[in-house]
Image (cartoon, rainbow, N blue to C red; front, side, top):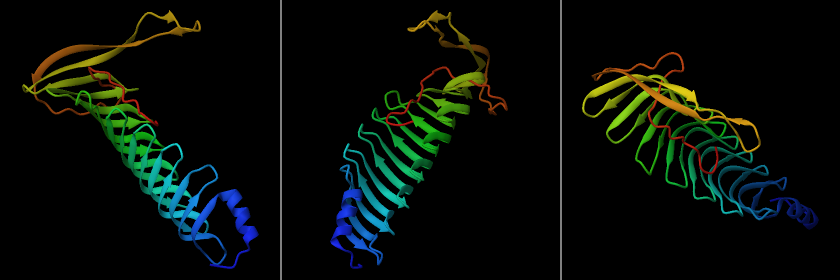
Length: 241
């Protein structure tokens, strides 16, 4: 540690809060230390040249907590974030954002295990519904079910394509009895009615049109965005999108 005047330490305390720990020759926080920030948050862990860098634990005064890797003051690498509502994310971070592979557990017990991009479900992932035991396995785009996917239930599953969280176009139901029902989903709008502020509002209704029943067959996703699903459970996220 270098010799730094008490006036400089008082100035740092007013700007950056209280700090106990290692410093480098320039007087910067460097090594292992604990900081109590002016807003009441607490960080305990590694520093490098005045910034949170390496392993650390950050406790927010609202009850949230992050445990994991830091890179130049940002959550970056592997880490677990505990949210005030009881939800939890465990996985990869890039520059303070959920990105890469991670598992998010929601307040109602639902889980998403898959890829993330810019804090949002994006890529391949599995969403499990705790209440029903069903799950969606497939592609996600900007937080929504898109393109090829599969809904898995206790005694049957649906394979098809999804658009904006809903099945659309050709698909098939596969039953445990060893048969399949092929068909396609159409989306139609109900009669429009005026909303609360006088604007026109409409509701999308899904209609399954069966075509034939066969034995088990392989299924290849269509190249366009067609496909379907009988149930329309939207996987809304709990604490964050």
